[in-house]
Image (cartoon, rainbow, N blue to C red; front, side):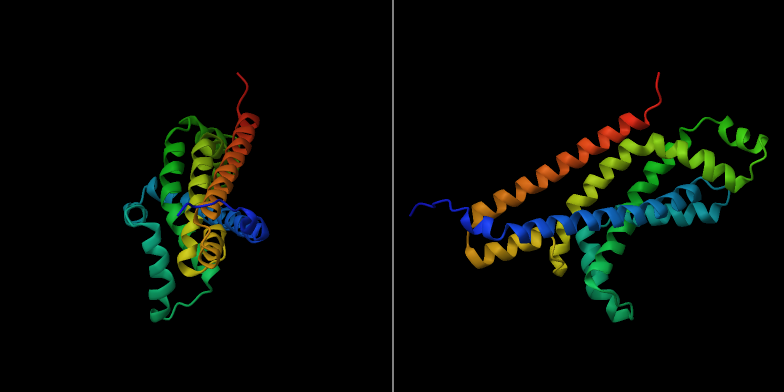
Amino acid sequence: MGYHLNFGVVWRNFDLLLSGLALGLGLAVVAIFIGCWIGLAAAFAMNSKHATWRRIASGYVTVFRNLPPYFLIVFAYFVLPRLGLTFGKIETFIVTLAIYGGAYLTEVFRGALLALPRGLREAGLAIGLTEWQTKAWLIIPVMLRNAFPSLGNNFISLFKDTSLAAAIAVPELTFYARKINTETFRVIEIWLVASLMYVAACYLIAAGLRFFERRLAIPR
């Protein structure tokens, strides 16, 4: 028995797929925003003169970079409530993805910090800035400019990881694609359209990031 393509059911539910895609993008934006702060703190800790801070940051990176994100999401949603830590499914997913992404961003920021000119900190202190002002107004802006390409790649990666939110019934694109597929049995159509939506979204994100990368580039 041949399989006949019928995209009508997909178009009738296309608003659900679009809302799921929008939610996925929102989850990725919030997660990378939080993850950037975590990664910055951990990167400075790994470059700290204090061995205790270096060990804590190194332990965090080692643990979370070696655990699958799916495992972390399921653990946070099903195990932590048993320990008295209960959050909504969206909040749980965002925090878990942010902590997971922060471990990767730590290495991105640490590499960018190590690539900074040695005299940048001394220059800030020489013009009367405090240690914290030097970090806030000189070191971090220059570091972020250097780290922007890798930061963009991590954002795209985190956006694709939002598909894992379907495991805890967060209504993003994969969740709705699976739901429509279960109700209509239009396997090829729904997953083909969902795949194209992911590809288009990632392509547009990459194009936007390249545009901003060119705008931030220092003229030569």
